[in-house]
Length: 489
Image (cartoon, rainbow, N blue to C red; front, side, top):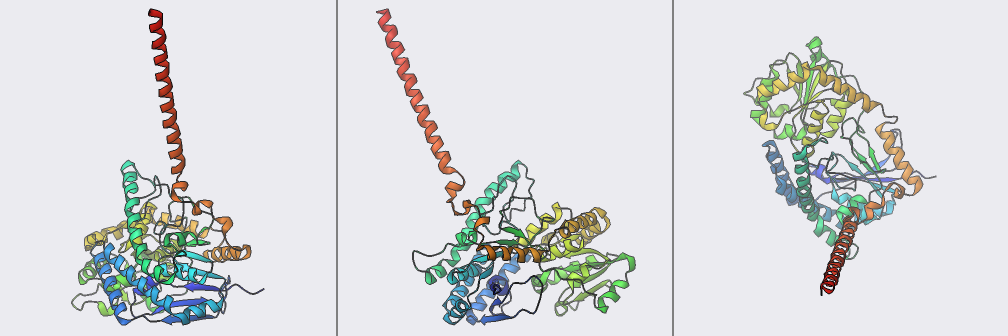
């Protein structure tokens, strides 16, 4: 029996953050449980230089605004318009499209932040599964989401809302729906250009068409909420076996003995855009610690007029997973990216979260609620405050205990994330799809799903019944009055 072949589509949005990179599609020849020698083909293409410049301009502005703790939704919409243009450019490439059709893949993997991958899967006419790299709510794929205890994405609420929290969550639902509609509409021209009238897909409907949804999270981190059978947690999917640290890191850690060390990694984007003022404040905060500090920070960006603290080691790159697994680590200062959070939970390391972009704020809310650490907003990034937060997490053992408890939950699954992913993929390939895992609700119009037609019918029946009852009472009253008058006469 031939092994299944899958097409992997990388998100353009992620690649768009690196303007020097061309968009890429990875095609993988087989799905296997163990990492073996697997052949794959890389198909790349380039868009016009002006398009890349426009994309970089909008992304730079989004990042700059985020570092100033300001929302830049309009620029996100403009960046998505650029991605729509890039998608149109790909769909016009008959050589690439013919090549993909001729490969005759069994299944397509798409990443939810890249709308083009949904359109490409639809164009190829192939079933697809989707990966959600962010918290729930960033994509609507039909999960039951009671607003009484399921926080709307970007509301920064928890599952334990008081009355005003529920009011905020209800209003945020409409605000987020409008923003989502605006983002979806950025691909309208691309859809009109490449799909014939009468069979044009709707992006929000395409998301619900996925056979399976793999969510990059874990029960140890997410709020408990209703899930559908085709929703599978695979948080920690990118986790790798721990390797020995390079000597330069071991020698540095050894200098601080039992005091241990703090790992600081705020992501490549923050390292690129971070201001000198922020670097100075962080450096001053680290001088107040008795621990060593290993800091992922571009050495070329380090200001010459700032003296690096004696207990700090800055490096362009660090083996994050291996450092988090080290027995002497005391704290992880992170931007709250999902993969970083999953690695910290994997190894039971408490955190100080300094969120910058979208889902990172949601992740840091969960870090605090789960008692895995504390948060610090960028606008609060002062040496005294950062030092206070770090010492709080290091010295209060409750954070370490909660992190270890989350790690136990994370490790106690009967199957690894990779085994869950591959097992479910095998299941739907053997059964011809995941129709048996999807409720009929995904095909219902919204007014049926929320029983609005039923409520309207019952309301009309009630009103008609009350009206008829009123009429009957009126007739009875008039009859009684008429009878009384006859008797009196």
